[in-house]
Length: 415
Image (cartoon, rainbow, N blue to C red):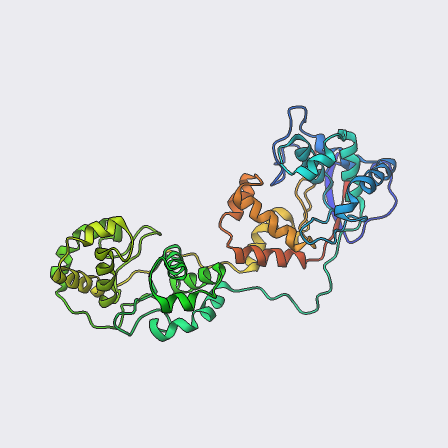
């Protein structure tokens, strides 16, 4: 017997003795996100809902009406955007997740309480019932969704910065630092330090107070992806003498002023007057950092001026910052497991199409934090920014959901 799967646009409302049949060949990997199962769970058990009879599905409806409908809707379509739609979901996936809730492998107190005393047979029937329903469809929202481009958003937020730091973060005003050639992690932390008052600058604090953390991260990414260049400002001091004096600095800031540590700033091409002011601030303790204070405390005025001139003379290097993928590029990666446009054709892998947007965001963040465990999903979600998560959730919530029937067909000769 050979197994094939057939996407359809609508499921029939009547069922034969075996509405759903085996959908995955032996040895197929477990669904991403499916947690470890209890010792009593045997491989293949999750395929039971695929063989549900019409009576099984009717009993599943009775169980759903009494236990599940208050959250997931009478027809498996939730009105709460943070609660998943279950109508038309893949039956084996639902069964795996219900077993995981029941065993405690997937912690969720309300869900665990609902399924704790249900038998495996009852879980099978609930899963089969939800899989028999027509899936949710995206709401008619009119115009196509707008996906946020974090680089363009960062550029827009950075407009007020241009007056002091230049249009692309290359300073033309002595005493004003370059903002390019910093790892986004460092620049984001520095901006937040000004906003919180940890770094003292009243003007900076007043300008940054209205910004959200997401805005700051976008600004940091925008500057990190700009073409690097030296500050277009004069540098007093002897750069050759500064090179000799800066030997102790290279361990953290790199041999040529290009740091290899995301938390440590690169100094190459920086405005000399700003560098000197920063060293004086560390020396006096007005800018807190024990390591920098100990190093700066032994420098005299000439050494500070020379070191600043040396780093200002160096050519800054491009930052190893990842240019964000578009939502289409991310979705192409997700579709490899979850099916074209989020319509999974694998019984063990959930469909994403027309799923509630708030739920999709919550699940991706849960994989990122480790609250929900899956090696595959952890690897995929770990590199997603908050903007990526919002864009992907919006994308899949707007896709047309398609139901899938899993059918058995006779083997071809020799199979």
